[in-house]
Structure formats: C-alpha cells, structure tokens
Length: 334
View 1 (cartoon, one colour):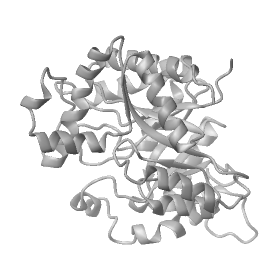
View 2 (cartoon, rainbow, N blue to C red; view 1 turned 60 degrees about the horizontal axis):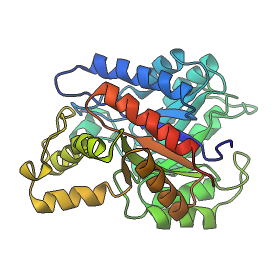
View 3 (cartoon, rainbow, N blue to C red; view 1 turned 90 degrees about the vertical axis):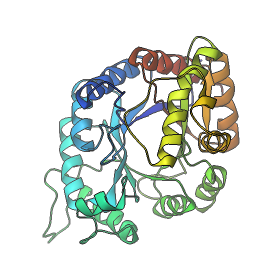
View 4 (cartoon, one colour; view 1 turned 90 degrees about the horizontal axis):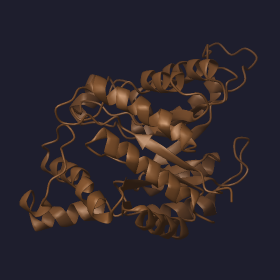
C-alpha cells in the first residue's frame, strides 16, 4: 500500500567530537543520497551560527551542495532565519537554487536569530532587520519570488517568477497564526519545544485562509528519531542528544558527544528531567517502537507530514537510524 504520509529529514550537519565541519558536510550529503533512495520527500538544513557543533550556517550554499549530489529529493531550509537577512538576498539565493534545480527547492522561514545576541549583532541583524518585521519581510520575499510587476524597480534576478515554495516554521503560536493568515504551509519545531505543539496545530487549521499558494492547511511536526535494531541500542545512542540538551542548558555547548553508558553519572536528576521534557516528541527504539511513536504523534497532531531529525554520534548508526525510520513511516496507514 502506498504511504499517504510524507516523511522528511531536518539536518543541522552535526559535527561529532573529534571530527571537522568538512566531515559533517560530507556526512550530510551521504545521508541525503540515502534518504532519496529510502523514499524521503524532502531534506532540509537549518541555519545556525557560532555553534561549534553545527556546520549548517551557510544554508543556501549547503542546499546547493546537497541538491547537486542528489537527483529528485526536495532540498531546502528548515529554516532560513529571515531577520538575519535582507529579503532580496534570500530571494536571489533561492531563486538561483530554483533555477539550477527546478521543482526541488523549499524555503522554510523562521523569525528567531538562530544564535546568541552577540552573534546576531555580528550578522548585522540589529541595523535594519528585526523579528518585529517578520510578516512584512515574508511578504517582501514573496513579492521578489513572484511575477514581475509593471514598473517594478527592484527585481530578484534570478528569483522573479520562480515561486519557490515558502513554509513558515515556528515553536510558538505566533508562527501558526502567521502561516494560517498568509495561507502557507507550516512546520512546528516540536523536536526541542513541544509545549505548544498541539495548540499550534489546532490553531493553524482553524485560522487557515486559502491562498494562491495553498487551498487547504498543510502542516508538519518535527520529531527526534533515534532508531536501531534493538530498543537498548537506540537508548544508548540517544544519550548523545540528551547530553547535548543538558550542555545547552549549562551553556557549555560543543561538538556532538559520543554516547555514554550511564546518563545519571553525567547530569543531575533535575537536568535529566528537563531534557526529557524538551525531547518529549521523540521516537527512540527498534522498528516496532518507532512505528508506535509515529502513530501516536500523527494521531495527536493530525499532521500531514513527519519531519525527522536525528543527532547520532556515529555516522553509520545515524544512517541506519534513518533507514529504520523510513521503514516505519512507510508502514503507517492514515
């Protein structure tokens, strides 16, 4: 039976401890090439800055690298943090990508800086850009990617007439309302901020206004997936992500750590509980366990698509995880 639920990947090109950004970028391409074979719909990368454990800062450049190394999977941003950039520049970048890889490029947009405030200032975000201008910037970007207008003085070349599909991304109710108002597809960042997932999905569907881009709501949620041949092996691999969340709260980020035998030796009970809350929307285990968790969250959210992310230290284990996740998603009947 054909799978009615599209399944996709969000990647931040994690840099494992002891490896380089070049290793991480090559790993991302390898995963994208396998994901294409395993039936994934899209492969997104996320903009982050000044993070020693992530190699996806030059998002448009990385998308071009991934698109060049694959043949038909959609490739895009999950997302570009629009307040960091002039809309015209993003229109030109993604218009170029769409011109090179027609019909394969997605442009997911977020309103957070994707970094700390000092780095945001280094990105010149505080000169003209502001998250308060996010709705206007989205409209401006749509204008540049749409049909040329009579007398239009500023044009995105490439960009004009490409109609690159725009998604609104978010981790709060704000993005849900904006996506609904603009009639755009919406993805919720529940892989690290699960609190308002169900309310945001409900609000998006209830407030949705059809547009020339989308005639009915289309929403996705993000889920951490760590799959392995056994539940025990997956739980061990998952300690990498758990450590990362604890270190983020301690403000001691670094490269992606190797899994450990006992998380209780690494952190205090309250830190472990806080990490568990942040990682509530996760599927960790064997094929059967992953299937069960996917069904649960699909039923709870009513989402149209699952977007999976998986920070696993060993590259081959990460590949295997996404392979098992694809098998699980294909088996779903909704």
